[in-house]
Structure formats: C-alpha cells, structure tokens
Image 1 (tube, helix red, strand yellow):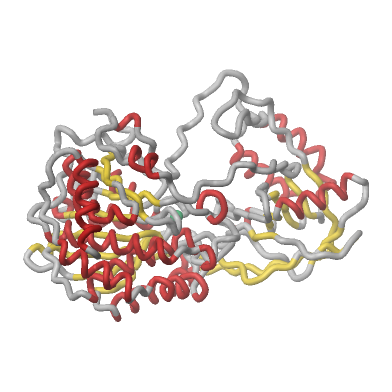
Image 2: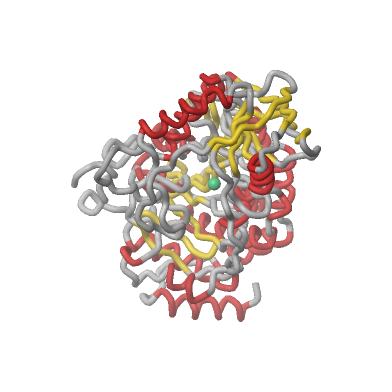
Length: 548
Ligand SMILES: [Zn+2]
C-alpha cells in the first residue's frame, strides 16, 4: 500500500486507541498480504463451489460433507496440511429436498413459490386435493415489546384443543393453511448497507463501558419474564400441537405463510427432526399464501396438485467439521484458529450465511500459505457444521479439544484465539474479543493500518452466553473467541436465512478486504511472543447458570 496511507492510518489509530502503541507490527508483511489478497484472490471461485456446486449445505446432508471435503482438498492444494473431517454426533438423520411442485389447478391454474420445511416427509406421489383455512386462537395481546410492538400471548392449552377439535373433520385429506396471512406494510426506510463511520467508531470505542455497548449481531433474545394468569402456550408449543393434530386427523399437507415482503421465504426445520411426526409442510411466499386465503374467503374451493420428494440420510447422524492448518514452528503446540460455519439452511445455496465467512477465512489462510509464512504458532482453519441447529459443531470441538475454564484439557492453556466471520458479505469493520482490555488493545493495533478499509478497532466482551455464532462457543468456555463485526449490506433485510441467499448477493471487493485484514491479524497473533491475555481465576466471568 502507498506510504501516505500507512501514515494516515497510524495517525488515525493513535487518536482512536489513546495509549501509545506497543505492538511491533510487521508492516512489510501486511503490505505483502495486501498484494497477495488483492491481485490473486480466489474468493469468487471458492464462493462458486461452496454455493453453486455444493449448496444448500444442510447439517447431516451429503452436500455439506462434500463441501467440507472440497474445502480440505482446496486448502491442501494451497499449501495447508493435516486436512481432515472431524466427526461429531448430530444425532438426527440427514435430510434433503430433491424437488417439489405445488401448482394451483382450480379455480385458476398457476405455479406457486414455496420452500419445503426441513426434516418433513414428502408426499406419496402427486396428491390432488382441496385447501382448508385454519385460524388457531392466539390469545390476548401482550404489552408492547421490541420493534414489532404488541404480540399475542398465545392460547391456553384448552383454547387450542377446543379449536382443533372443532376442525378435525375439516382438514382430513386436505392441505391445511395454518394462520391468516401476515400483512407486511411497505417499508419507507431504506436499509443501511454501510455502517456510518461515527456509528462504527462509537461501537468499537474502548472507553465506552461494556454495559453501554450494543451486543454482538444476532445476540440471543432475553427470555420473556413469567406473567400472571393461566398457562399459555408458546408459539413453538402451538406449532407442535398443530403438527400432531394434522397427522392424527389425516391432513394431506400443511402450508405456512412466509410472512415477508417481495417473495422472501425463510424455511427452517421440523423441530423434532423426525419426518414421521409431521405431515408434508411447505412455506408459501406471503403473496401466494394470501391469494389462496382470499379466494377461499370468497367461498370458492381451491384445489392443488402437490408433489414433494424428500430423502433421509441415516448416515447424517454423524456430522463433520472441516479442519486444515499451517503448522507452527517454535510454538507449534499453541494453536490459533479462524473459521466460520459451513452449514446452511436449505431454501437457497447459503451464500451470505455462511459461505462468505468460510471463503473469507479460507482466503486468509491461502494468502498466508501463498506467502510461505512460517508462523511460530499453528494456524488452524475450522469450517463448522451444525451452527444453524445451535452451534453444535463448534461446541463439540471446543468440548473435545479444550474443555472449559472450569474443566480444561491440556490444550486449553495453549489456545491462541478463534477468529469468526458470520454476518454476511459486508466487509469487516471491527473485532470483539472475549477477554481483558489488553486483548482488544493488541487487535486494535494490528487492525489499525486497515483504517483505509473502514476498520475502526476492537473491543472486549465478557459474556459467556452462547448464541448467535460459533465464536460464542469459545467465549462460553472462557477462551478468546473473536467475533468480527461487518457492514450490514443486505444481510438482515434480504439474504439472512432466505430463499434469496445466493452467489449473486456477494460483494467480492468487501470479502477481499475482510480476508486481507484477518490474514494480517491472525499472522500477528501467531507471531508475537505471548498469547493474547486472558481473564484470570479472579476475573473470569461465571459461566451462565453458575453463581460466582
Ligand atoms: Zn450463520
């Protein structure tokens, strides 16, 4: 990079960081990393394979295993070693949808846009049948909470049972639409694609008290406090009751409303992961769901021809993390990790959630391997499975290799940190590390020369709650998980978990910048004399659920 940019960046960093810089930054190496990452980037090719060729990559599916094998082969071709798939126990069969069709055949003929709910059964060939509307009770409205305003509190078990008993004969042999279509109002506020500079600088301002900082992106929702009155069913409990009712009543299929604008569909899973416990289930785009609902409201019967072909993979009970590394030298037994989750949901090819995170980390490792670095510590890439089902792959890995602060393995003390990317295609703007202030000071200094990319710094977190993404599996164990904060681009609004999460939505320029900055940070932490500072016995926050 040109010298004036370096000087500008250093001045900016000095202003932001306050205390005098103490890290010895290898600017010559950072310059080589920039050149390699900019001129010979493999990110688009990696993204093509992970999405077009191997997507969707649902946990337990043969696609995900094949994607992991491809990634290992690729990393080894770039010069990494010890590539292998590490098994962990998923405990559920793999599942894939092969195809489906659900055309309207009466009173009009038309195709519908839908996605299949994962871990549901297919139909037995083509089923031609009518559609029935269900409007299960939702209970009274609760107090206003969060941006969505007041939400219904849910029915009592008796209210739900009373309603379902009354419609048991109505749904036999039919497709049941569950719930009235959502009314999605027009959104007059264009979503933020870049985070404003002042806003991002405030977010990563180390002088702000931890309590005033926003949580990590997609942090777990606090649980709703218990309320007085009769027991009410949660949305999930209502859902399971309705599934059991439809199966027992001989319904042909279940339709849910996607409830989002512009044809967006988010399709998750049957939470029992057992296709014998539910009827075939589709999520219709809000526009098609609403159309059928309104025609039925006219008193006109609606008929469809439904065919869904799903397949179970018993071998998917064993799932995998894909691992490869650049061996260390004089500190080879100290391991520094970088990664993201390779699994995706199945409605699209999982481009921004999270092939982008995997491609950025693979590229960061490629850059270092291409430069022939001989890091002091071992640099290990990990591409996780099972993140979407609850951080399962990374939790299994941390448990097996490192244990926890309270019950450590021998490798625990020698762990160098884990860098994670999992918030879409937007470029990295800052880092949040689990540990004392000194850990963030180091990351802030090594990232400071990338101010021209819009990177503003690093802060700490002391939360050991898991949720959101795989770095929190490390935080929970008391290890330095490092979550990279990113520009939103179209992630939260358009691509996250939707049927629109495809290769077309990536921003390769942003991803190149993220990979370059992360390669530089990983290299620095792998080379410095000491590991990142950690909480001590006296300062380690209690694990969730443990008094301290
Ligand atoms: Zn994700």
